[in-house]
Structures are given as structure tokens and as C-alpha cells.
Length: 259
Length: 259
DNA sequence: CCTTGTGAAAGGGTTCACAGCA
DNA sequence: TGCTGTGAACCCTTTCACAAGG
Image (tube, rainbow over all chains, first blue to last red; front, side):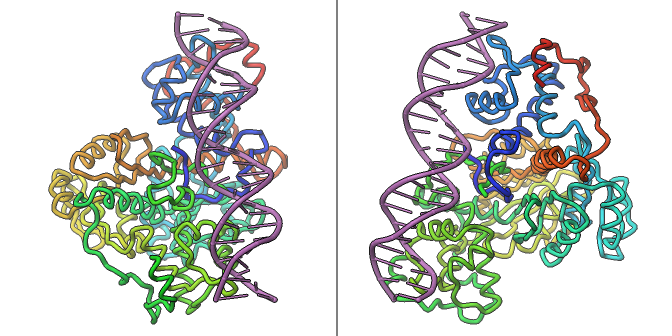
């Protein structure tokens, strides 16, 4: 139930300045989505148990999480949906509008730009940037892709506070450096590498291959305990080495035996 | 430094059956990537301190993590890069090859299919499925997109153990149900909703808007403490309500005053 | 001498169970 | 009566500091 393996690097891991635990902050968006769904169904009041089920958490956790925002429930009744939507939104800073720049207009960048939920509530894409002349000038989700050379101008012009990196790994650090130099202090990184940033810059990482690898670990455990079930096939032994010459580890026999 | 807010739901949160803590499992892929990078640079031995920096963690944590796999280091020297690559790969189950099916061949599905690192090591895309006749039959990353009706046949034929859901939210639960019924026990979900699955099925979630909202929270904290800095503009007040009629919460004045 | 591997301590997060209140 | 809000217990994770050992 805990959320490990997260595609992100949080600077501190400590309580936020507002005194709200990180783990709670990470769940608020989930609650918010569940609350919107309830509101759209016309539900005006919800008990912690029901909201917890909709959000996929346990109700005690939900109540403790919400208690960090204030006492917004009514004992014996539950929570007012609209009011809670507002309080959670306000806590997350979504009563403001956040200008976002997406760097990289390949498939991923396009997917992000077209992802309705991404932009709808609280976020506006100020610009999409790319360096490929074949892509610059094309239109994506009502935006014309601009050249990455305009990065600094765009950040300044729209007061962009959040940058999304959807470039290949090779260009990600350079893009990140430029974003930071231009004044961006929040970065969402989709490139598969660890970005280094100065103190005070908040980086979250979304890494598809890491997620798959974590799934593989658990799948392996399952198929090991249930032999013959639908696990992976085609064992590759030691074959999956990098393009490095020596594949055989120089290692003591005792260590190898432990394996 | 802890990884909260993760786009995933882990079934238990307890130690895996192999006795490796979840938090460790979640970091192993990061170490693996750093090790591959070292190997490609021709480095044959690495100390915990150096590897920890490359992976963006502290060295005590790295050593404790690796100690769960066994005693693979050499005191006074460090770790053999190739050997450690192998041990971490084996632990994660990457010495097998995992057939994956991607459902949804829109921009996101295409981005996933073309994402080199995604597929390269340990994972093979068995098929891409979609229900849009305009997309079915097109070729993406050397694969011909097949109709989603073939889902069950594909899962059986290729012994698919991992399903990736890259569909709109509206179809995600139905797709998930079909994957699970067909025998898939690991699901990577990109659709913005909480999937319900039977016991024993492992779901991880990647949710772009949740990541953005977490960034917004921290950005808000920063701009609140440094007034006048480049935070968000254009406050929207209470405007961001769902298409629900009553936007005004019926709430006691005392509660509102607390806000 | 240098670095690993690990007890022990410290810090959060989750869960339980119930007091408190509408 | 029913549900929220929360102290306390429990559990996991991180970090420290050093013993062990090549």
C-alpha cells in the first residue's frame, strides 16, 4: 500500500513547510480526482469510508491526511464534496494557474500536450519546444511548436515555473540546466537519467522502464512460487550485458556460489 | 529523499517474499542504470560512494540495499561492475525476457513503443493493440497494430505477463479486466483512474497530472515564502469547479474562517 | 588503510481503536 | 447513533557510526 519506487526525487522527504507530510501531499491529487468524480455524479456529501474506497486507500489514512488540511468534516455526516474539492485544490496550489513549458515534441511530448486531464485544471501549456526543424512550426494541441532556442524567452515571457522534460536522455541535462538558469524551479523529468540540479530546485521523475522492472521483480516472485504458471520464458542467462567487452565477472568462486 | 507520491499501488508494502524491502526493489533499477553507464565507460570497479552519487542516493543506503542481495562487494576495494550488473539484473528478474502487451496506440502508446530503453533490456513488446480502425494495421516500431479484440489471443500466444494500459480513462477498467481474465498479473497503468483488480494482481500507476500537482504544491510553498518571485500568476479563485451546479460550499462560517 | 556490511538509533508513515462531537 | 479526528502502537525506512576484513 505504501508508495515506493516512485519516479521522483523529492528534495527533503520531510514535512513540507506547511506541516503537511510528503506522503499526504502525494495522495491529495488522488483524493481530488475522486472528489471531482463524486461531484460530477451530483453527490454532495461523502463519508471517509466511501471516499477512501474511491481513492484506493484505507479510511483511517484518508481521515488523517485530511486532518492535516484542517477540520473540514462533519462528525456523524461526512465531508461536503464541493468544499473539500476547494480545500484540497487550495492546499495543492491549484487555485492559481501554473504556466508549464514542455521541452521535446516527440511522441511523448505530444501525448502530454493532448492529455486533457493534464492541462485542464490548474495548468496551462505556455509553449512546446523542440530542436528538430521537421517538428518546429507544426501544430500540437492548438500550439505551434517553437525552437528550443526560445526557451529562455518563453520562460521569462510567460513566467513559467514548471518545466517538463520529454527529450531523449542525451539532451535532458542540458535542457534542465537551461530551464534552471532561466528561473524554473520545478521540473518533471521523463528522460531516463538522474538530473543534477542546484539546491532549491524540485525534480520529479517519471521513468517507464523503472516501473516495468519493479513489475518484473514481483512477477518473477510469483512465477517462482507457482511453477508452471504464466511467467516469462526464453531465459537469456547472462546474455544481457552492455556492449562492454568482458561479460564474465572476475569474481571469487565463493561469491559466485552464494548466488 | 524518500519516494512518496508514487504513481503506483503496491499490493502489500511488506518485504517481498525474497526478503528484499520494497523500497530497495524500487531503487535497484536506478542502480542498474548507473552500473550500465559505468560499464560502458569501461569502469570495472566502483565504490559505494561513487555509485551512490551516480544514482542520486546516499552511500549508506546503497550499501544496505545491496546487502539485501548478498555480499557482493570487496572490502577496501568496492564492487565489480559487471558482476553487480548481473546480480542486480538477476534479482530483478531481468535475466529472463518479459513479453509485454501495450493496449492503446495513441501518442502515449507510440511513445512507449519507441522508447528504446523501455524495450531494450529484458522486455519485448509482443503486440500493440487499439480499437480505432484508423490506427489498427499501421506500423509502429516494427510492429503492426492489432485490434483489441485479439487481446486474449495475444496474451495466450505470447504468454504475456505484463500489460501496459495506455488508453483513455474511459476504457481502462474494461481493458484491465480483460487483461486479468486472460491471465496477466502485472499491469502498468497510464490512465488517470484507480483500477480495481483482484487479489494477486500487481498494478503500478504512472499519472502525469498527479506529478504536476505535487510539483505545484511545492512551488506554491516556495513562492509563498519568497514573495515576488516567479510563481504562478492569474489566480482563479474558486473558479475551478466541476460542471456541478452549486459551486458555493454549504459550510459553517467558523470553518470557512479557518481556511 | 580503505571500504564494505551491519547493529542500533532515529525518523516517518500506517493502522488501530476510541474519545468526542454533530 | 454514526462518523470524524487523533493519541498511541506498530512497522518500515533511513541514517549513523563502527566492527570486520580484504
